[in-house]
Length: 330
Ligand SMILES: Cc1ncc(COP(=O)(O)O)c(C=O)c1O
Image (cartoon, rainbow, N blue to C red; front, side, top):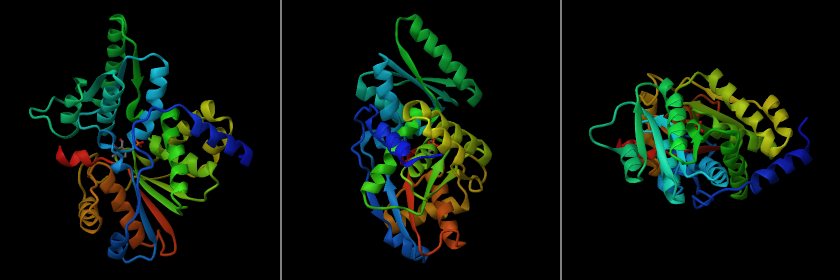
């Protein structure tokens, strides 16, 4: 059972957890009236602009890394190691965090070194990260372990940051973000956002539950099947019991975790007709930029939900913009 007392204690612990100051928070919350008009809905549509977090081209990873990097510093780390694709937003945000904190950064990227560095790969290089390329996704974690061993053997102190910084601690960044949204005066009926490694959804879902909000948090998958993402989100929430208290076990058990994997289309990063429409709509109504890997597919889902009545006219919806705009220049 989730008692109000346990929930407020968990919120207090989340708010008191150590963070490094990276982004200028709160991120803006904007009402998207022209998008709403274009969709012909009575629903109020807001956009939570984590894409506009100024640090290192922003995005959802900044919230997670602010917590994860504080722990790394407390552990005496001198190097952050992480994994991702060649154009990973998470890898770029980790490289930016390391640069800002005076740490070294080692990235394991699956793929081949592009002949011309663009987008996030260009930023990784400017940020001074060392990039090691591996052939496949499955090679990434073993390569991260080997890199950590090499750095340790040379006298360094590396911290391995899992994919997407989607650890229970990282996700606490998004528990805090729900409080930030409430302070901006909006209590959404629905939040729609892009989901992949699950940390954003875990934090938002847990944050809404702890604040006693009936909000539906709908994660729109960028790649994996809904059941896999749901399992991951639930286990991240359960893992928050260490830092936030045993109430998180009940939250993990009882939370409704909604993942929609029907917008992936041809695969990770492959545009769909719906994501192309959503990308143009966002730009032409609100001067908002969404990318085909994550945020355009999430926005395409929101558009579809409005059109088919799953988001009815009498509700307030927040599109949580998780960033990814650098991908437009890849
Ligand atoms: C722009 C963007 N949106 C959403 C996501 C998904 O967030 P999470 O990994 O927390 O599920 C990512 C990360 O992979 C991302 O880069």
